[in-house]
Structure formats: C-alpha cells, structure tokens
Image (cartoon, rainbow, N blue to C red):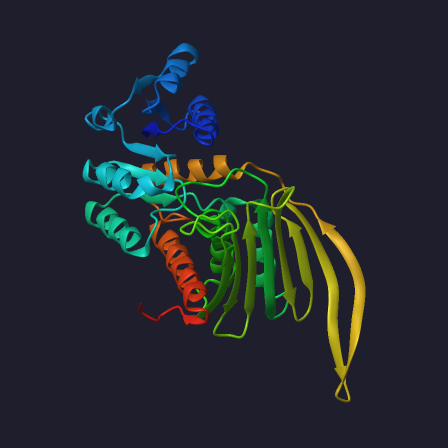
Length: 332
C-alpha cells in the first residue's frame, strides 16, 4: 500500500515539500495526489508544470480517498487545518509549530490519538545526521557527563508575521536539547527584545535552560544578524563537540579538566573531524512519516514532542514577561 498524500500550501517553503514529495513518489513510496493553496498564481503554476490535482478549498480534497496531508502554511493556521484534517480521518504531517500555544497543541495530540491517526511535526533536526551522531556520542558515554549545551539559530531574513523569533527559530534548539537529553528542562530564564517595534513578535530571544541533573542549555535566536548561523556545542566532562548543524559537520574535541590535589589542569589532546553522511532532513522526515502511515509504527518526531517544545517556549515567554525564572511545571 502506497499512501496517497496531498500538500496543503505550496509557497516559499512548501515548494521544497512539493519537490520532495515528487521525489518520494518516483521512488514508489507514495502517490502524490495534489496541492491545495488559496493563491491563484501558485495553483496556475502547479497546473502548468505538474500532473497534479489542485484546489483552493481543502474541503474538496478531504472528500477524496487521500490517506494523508502535508501542511506547510503559516503557523497561526496550523491548529484549524490539522483539526479539520484529523476530523476527516486523514494522517497529518505539519510543519512546526504544531500550534501557536500549548493548549491547542495538546488538543491536536489528543484528537489524533482518539482517531488512531498519525500526527507528525516538522522537528527537522531529529533527522539531521550531525545531531543524530551527537546523540550517539552522548548515549555511548564518550562525552562523559554533559555539562552544558549552547547553540545559535540566527540569520538575516524577513520577520514572520505569525510567530516571533522564539517560536520560529529557538524551538529548533529547544527540541534538539529535548531529543539529546531525553527529558525536558525543569526551569527556564528568558530575555527577549522587540527591536522592530512589534510588541507581539520578538526579534531576539536568549534562553537559559536548567535540567534536573545539572545540565544547562543556552539558546540565542534572531532574524536580524547578518549571515546564517545554525550551530551547536556540547561540553562534556570527558570530551566536547562542536557542530555546524546546517552543514552537518562535526568536530570532536578531546579536552577535559584533570583534578589533582584540589587543582585543575586543562588537558587538550587535540581535535578530529567526524564524517557523517549528508542526507536531506526534509526528505528523511517525510519518508519516515509515510512509512509510519503505512506500518503504524512510532514516529521520531510526533505531536507529543512538538507540544513539549511549545510548552517550553510558552514558559520562556512567560519568563521574559515576568523578568524571572519560571519552573516548567509552574502554571500560569
């Protein structure tokens, strides 16, 4: 059985999903049924260049025998679109964020469970070869105890009009940390700035996350700096690692502090690059989604994982508003 799938939204990032779905169809992994978009020019381009069904109204597609949908629309539309598709008994892949608040995210998770449907979310770095290798090194104990993690997700681009830099950028590292630690932090301290004067959408966010075992996570995100920075550093008691997760490169640092007679010596035994096989994370995550639709197996990036990132992001914004640390379990 090849899942029949429709794409909802073929705009700037939706074009990438369109390309990948066509590749997966050629590989025999799905039947790409068509595209839904409310922009006339996009549908005209689809009809001109591809042999796909098109519609401006999602309702038309939900009446067909499609098995699944791939939602790539603005974040503030995700809740209603996901809800509509789940009620129509369609499996759902949706780009992050799953919703713009935790309450709505949990409703979608519960609805998918009630309908016995797959709810996958674009937590794309769980499919990044460099991030997966880092997890392997942590799990094997090669890095020792993880002291702290820090990362930047920054790059000059037009600001989103549906979410701020935290829900657009910082959530990637929040989820990476959840994935690597296999737990969520117990406390968050956050500071944000609204340099462009839009009080509902921060342009800069700095997060400080504390975990029960003493590990610390730091995240800086913004769409104002020049360039394009997607990096991650893990500092361990035995070794450390630095990564350009965008380029999927890794460098292992054989450095540690040696204690003797209440004194510490900085030991540096050099560095080495670690080769990882570069694969497109978007293709891997959509392939995984289709496989889960076909077999019913557990997802790597499901609604539960996405809801946790939103909960932490909400607590971070609460911390920024209250100008103090906030316990993740603390109610508003």
